[in-house]
Every structure is written in structure tokens, then in C-alpha cells.
Image 1 (cartoon, helix red, strand yellow):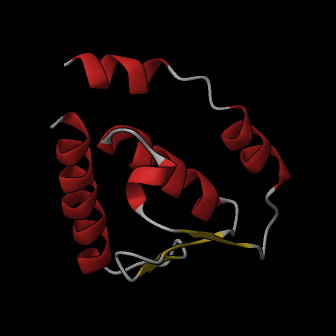
Image 2 (tube, rainbow, N blue to C red; image 1 turned 120 degrees about the vertical axis):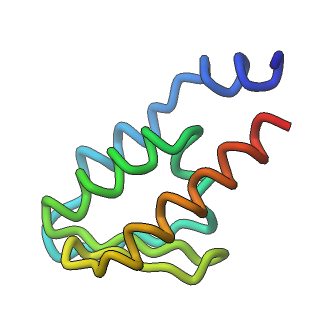
Image 3 (cartoon, one colour; image 1 turned 90 degrees about the horizontal axis):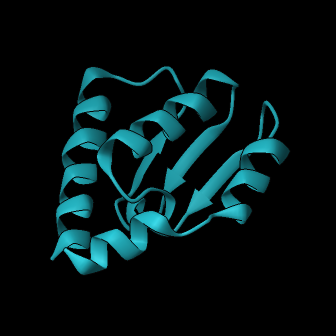
Length: 91
């Protein structure tokens, strides 16, 4: 529990810079889902926000990419893998 509170409270200025800087046609490459977001809700919000702006999001560790034109299976994998990343962060 203590670890979660600490991670949740961290100010993330570089993420805010990335959100402001990324443009349509860009690809954001991230090592793993848990490096982008601390919980599943934030992960979904960020990925959907980027893809809605025409920005591709790739996760190296999970070998997944999201473009906004994703299949139902991609959406499911984002949810499942994101949930595992959140759970691992709470352990």
C-alpha cells in the first residue's frame, strides 16, 4: 500500500511535456505499459487520447501497438496487460 501511494503522488512533468509535444503522425515508443501509466484507467485514457489525435503508441515489452483503428482483441489486450501491470505495481 505504501508503494502505491508514493507512485500515485509523483508529479510527472515529462509525461505532460510528451502529451503537449506529440503531433498527428508521431509514434510514441514506450518500454512497457507500467512506464506510461500507474493504473489501468490512466493507461486507457492516455492511449485513447494519443490515438484519437492520430498518434501511434507502441509498447516494446508487451509487443503491442495502438493506432486508434484497433481490433477488439487489441482493446482486450490493452485492458488485460494494463491490469497485470497495475497489479504488479501494487505488489
